[in-house]
Structures are given as structure tokens and as C-alpha cells.
Length: 205
Image 1 (cartoon, rainbow, N blue to C red):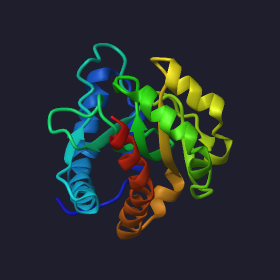
Image 2: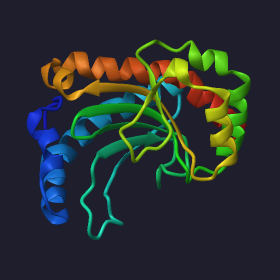
Image 3: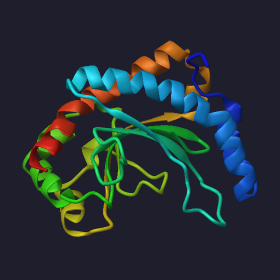
């Protein structure tokens, strides 16, 4: 399959009723794109980080009733899985694309990472104005990077279920209009900006 960005039909996937029906559409419409885009991004990060990185595509295997509201690919240094590791994410909700460096609740040592980031909160807040932060990967909500506070990071440090995802949102309307090469380069540049944070996190684990 040729490298291509996302179109209206991909976002419309999340309006399909029924677990099996929506999963079929995810597998047919979105996952083939994830494989091609994800391979491109994984190769890019492997070169950038000077180590082999591995692509994972969300399977939503635990779902038995409710269809997923979003789907994603993840890239990390572990071949077997990504949830217990700092990882890069690219995924879709029905109204936007998210591009994250993700520290989710399954990650052992999340408290150490949050403690490190607390001491460098000025550097986090000096990321580009277009960057946003999510505190729960299951929700669409995000705050601007400038709004990230020590209280947020303290919660990530002390609350097991608390999460930290840093990156960008790209609206559905923008994503549909973007040239594929421009889109891929934007994601690569976002990941490149986040690489120092990834390296800092890996250093304390």
C-alpha cells in the first residue's frame, strides 16, 4: 500500500454502530494506513534515537460490547508491547488526530518520570504553543502545554491511574486537507520535538 494520509471516511468509522461492524471498518480502512505510516515513523525514530524501535497497532482485543471511540498506532523500544513503556502514538478520534509521547497508567516508574519532569517544568511549558497535554488517553480533552502545572505532574506522580500525554491535535478538517507528505513531515517534526523528553524519561527508568 502507498503512503497516504487520512480522509473523511476514516473519521466516519467512529459513527458506525456495533462492535464487530466498527472493528471491521477499523481493520479495513485505518489499520492498513497505520502499517504503512507506522513503518515510516518507526524507521524515522529508530534513526533519530540510534536504536531499533518497534511498531504496535492497537487491536482492541479486550472489548466485548462497546466499540472503540478511537484507534492508534504506538512506537516504542520494546518488541512485545508498548503500554508498560514510554511510547509515541498516532491515532484518531472521530474529530481529530492525536500525536503523542505517552506515559499511561500501566507504565512502572511513571512516578519517577513525573518527578523528573517536575524539576524541568519550565522546559515542558516552553514547547511550541501548538502543543497540548492530555491527562487521560481515553478522553478527547486536552489542555495547552502552557497550562500544564506542577499540580498536574504531582497527580501523575502520586495517582496510579493518572496519565501524561504530550503532543499535538490535528483537527479532522485540517487532516483531510493536508497533503500526505506535509502531514507525515508534521508528525515527524512533532516526534522530533518530543524525543528529548522521551530520552529523559528512559534515563530515569
